Amino acid sequence: MKYYVWGFVTFVLLIAGAISCNNSKSALTPNNQLGDLDAVSRSLNGKKLSGRVLGTTRESDHAQVVLIRVDSSRSSYATYAVICQREQGNAANALSIDIEKAEVIMTPTVLYINSLADGSKYILKVKSDQADEIVARLPDNYKKNVSISEGYGVSYRTGEIPFDLAKYQKLLDQQRNTNARVMGPCKGGGPGSSSCNLGTGSNSCSVTCQAGYYACCNPSLSTIPDCNCVRN
Image (cartoon, one colour):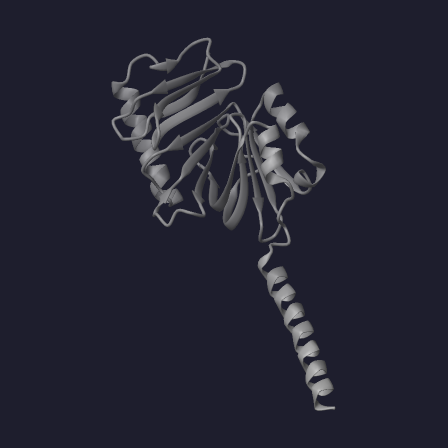
């Protein structure tokens, strides 16, 4: 009789352990995680990332600045800085985010961000047919409750970018003021170009612009090249 009792107790403990394991696994799986992120990113010829994301709208020119630090990085530097240039005075869809865990898709004309904490979604995009097409191709659940901001250019930068919005904006202003005084014609891009890139590896930048603007990429006195859109 005792063998039957032991067998029953063992069975109950195994079932309880399995339920506990499943519950623990569910607790570790974010409820707001999007499905098929790899496949969607590949279909858009984009780059998929996951990590912490900071974002703000600059008071000086209403450009939107996003800093991304990927999960594998424990550095005090951002992996990418993304700038959505907007017309002076365009204060619509002001950005103020600090997302501890996010899914990100980067394409030359569209930056897509999904918060795993609350499911909030953000799109920063160039005002162009190409960017509109990319957004249209996103699955429906990717576009639910999404905040969309568009500007005349989206640029990506890598380098020694502090993972701190206030510090990076100060460096950005210093870089632009210095470059405006000492740099000549565009090293990359120039009138007639809708995009350009400069630099390689960990010190590089790229930009894509809407019609009516041209892309301009220049080396910088800092370690990070400067890529921007300039009105024709």
